[in-house]
Amino acid sequence: MRIVVATRVNQFFIEVGTQETVVEIKRKIEQIHGVPVAYQILTVSGWELVDGLDMEDYPIVTEGTKVDLTIKSGESDTINYNSKMQITVKFPAKRTNIEVDQTDTVHSLKEKIHIIDSAPIKRMSLFFLGKELDDDFRNLNEYGICEFSEIIVFLKTTHRSKEPAARKVSFVVQTSTSLLNAATIPLEMRDISTINDLKQLLLCRKILPVDDYLFIHRQRIMRDSCSLRWHGVENGDYLYVFKGTVSRGA
Image 1 (cartoon, rainbow, N blue to C red):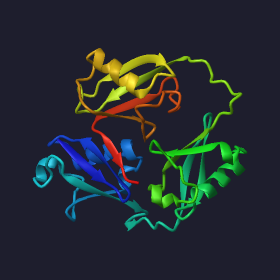
Image 2 (cartoon, helix red, strand yellow; image 1 turned 90 degrees about the vertical axis):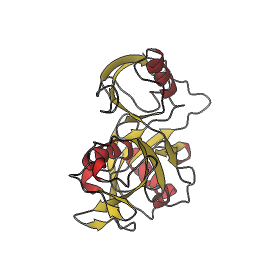
Image 3 (cartoon, rainbow, N blue to C red; image 1 turned 45 degrees about the horizontal axis):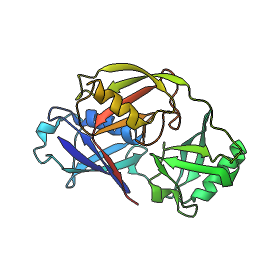
Image 4 (tube, rainbow, N blue to C red; image 1 turned 120 degrees about the vertical axis):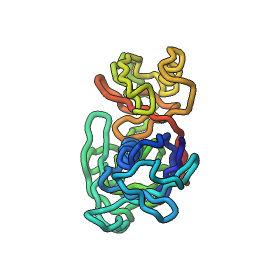
């Protein structure tokens, strides 16, 4: 069945089985949202879902049920959205951890990235969970950025810049336990191929049945219209696939 997982600022859909435990569902959420299992609290209508139980123990959880996700900080306190936190900033060829505040603006984050990497602020585009942080004066907490979040940095090309030539990349598609009994599928595609191209390939080869799917790479939801290169997929990387779709708030 498909359930809705709702955070403070967005929501997404995942497919779960009636015999899946709460911990298994939290692992799926970790793949999609990047929040470690130990930091998750799942509730339905104010009732907390206990790790040791499965969906059959919660008859209130049915198709389309909204499950609220709260993120913990430390042992028992919920996150203080005004506190300092560590996030990961991923560049095309490296990644680094930096300290920010939830009240920092997107522009102030760009300034910190400029100090670290000397990247021109005016050419910088930042992405979180596949969505561009397109308003420099909005706070990070308005985008749902929290501890452990990963920010992707892209530099806008100038008119004189040339796109690198396409190359082949070998990677592995790993299905969830609810799909094909957790199959491992090695593939090779051109890095300019989009995620939609990948979906069509898997559907045409009848590797996946016709349905809605989420692809996850390094704990980030992949965008259908963007290429493997855009997502930073390298040789040997794993792409995880789940049934479901995602929607985000403003």
